Image (cartoon, rainbow, N blue to C red; front, top):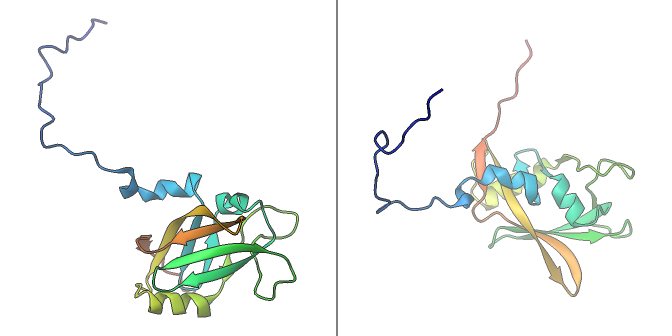
Length: 153
């Protein structure tokens, strides 16, 4: 096979006017390397990276900042009355789907979200008084239309 000579076949152009498209516009990839929280009209879930970021703790307390659209996860023990089990079970280090339609319907209303959409935000590890926490910023979340449930006839 003959080698292709590019000098005569490919047009030289100028890069004037082109701008780099930032990686933040392609947010679906955050689910693979960053802690994420996904919220739909009936519940929410966190990914395995979020679980690992909090050392696979068994329970968390969720705190909400309504104005900043932030959700903070605080690792807690079973003695914390507001603690939520967020792992499937004690032995398995996998996040569980949390059904909490009363909470999520409040969020959708509070944050003026479309009830037909699912929302996801990346989180980051933060500290308060030397305690490691996870903060999810929903001020500009990724969003997509929720799949419609099939109705059996």
